[in-house]
Length: 402
Image (cartoon, rainbow, N blue to C red; front, side, top):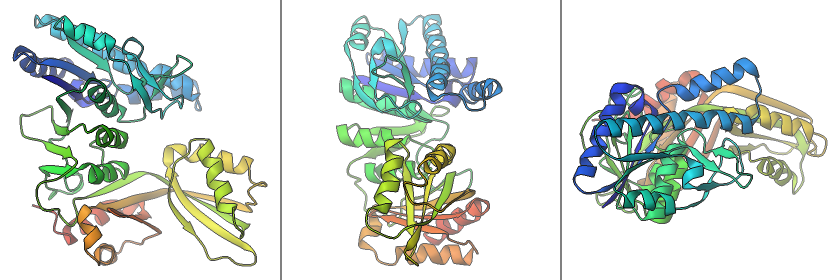
């Protein structure tokens, strides 16, 4: 049996944590299984590296940031290999170049294109535990390109898919997927299982349990995931295509503070204007989420939309650079906003879900700025200061607590 195990930064934060992970992986190895371990950088290493970069240059190039950030995972995997050796278990650490993990060229937000399996299979053939750096790929220029925060999840799924692994286990500092972040909502309940579609929506809307592209890839290649804690032996949450139990109306509530709103004012009210704006941003790899267009007046209209806060300055620069061509009279932005989303496959066949959510927010005196919906999700944009009150109110209104 081939098992891929991914451990997050808090799971390998120090010496004790590293040996705890090594001993846990050694159990499967001693039971005769082939084991691949994917690791994130230790603890707050990535944040510390970002801080060091900002000491040198407040606006460092994304390529150089990726060169810097990939060192975090290389420290993790080499130390983990040493821990296995200390336990008398053969192991080898590999980075993205050694595997080789081919990616697109977008620094800071790359996607995997292909994972070569020869080196990993060669090392497994010698009965070694293979430890691979998460979060990083190699692009066509033979540069490192990182997958964005949480990208180690996607590394694990990509390897599991490429090698046809029997299991892909994601270990983190929580023991599964909850109906809401238990640090914000004390009554949040752990789910035994959740569908790929629901998990992907939760992940993309701010639930920090899984990287959203890891779920997208797992669904595409049929990789069943299990999310569980690295700190205890409790059963986790299974993420798969079909959920056996009757689908809940709502599976969870998520919040995302990494959000900024941009408004472009006074653009021409004619066909093709919106296309030009969003096509310009797409060419620069800017992802846009919620979009709201005003009713036209005096031959002009306004469009508001949200982007990740990390992309705000790049987005503003692109719009300013193309202001005349895009017929923009004025550009406004706001950072103190957040998204609240409810997700559930059951809402497709149950009218009134949106009204129930809006009622909860009204009773909690939370103002809604923008609204976006899909078949399994409703998202609203609110003030960042209202997040905790809003998510608790919505969670309670749908009876998601224990």
